[in-house]
Length: 207
Image (cartoon, rainbow, N blue to C red; front, side, top):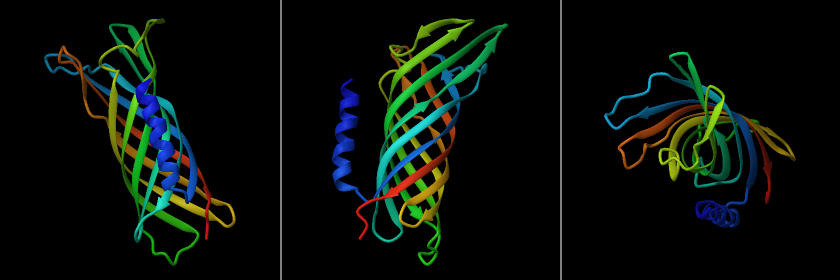
């Protein structure tokens, strides 16, 4: 809970600093987990799962072609699997703060359309998690492999179409891979995600 309060305080402070655009994004996460036991062996029976993504945030132009964005995110990082005719799945939700640095590729003379390359880092903590084994569910929130702060660096691109007196619409893609989160037994868990998104952006404080 303390981590959630920290996220909220950082977001409020950022709101006072960055105040040119408010955005809302939603999309799909296609996630694959990599679980290694204490001997370093991976679980090859886990398959990619699909989940939802939501983010609300603010962005501000920086010097030249760069801009910076920060926002609250809610991500589903899910997985499915089957071993010896026993089916299982992981359903998780992570609350986080996402920060991104964007670089505009197209020249400023093009007004309607813009294309950005972006790099970012997300810090997240699990708020919901269930492991289902043949219809029997177990809580994952308190498992050491899932708990704590998870850092998720990512790269991607964003295309925006401007609408006068309104803002813009966007479509984008991110690839991310979380850093390993280890427990005392030497087990490690990470995940990689292909993320597609649609966004709506509202201009504020325009001069």
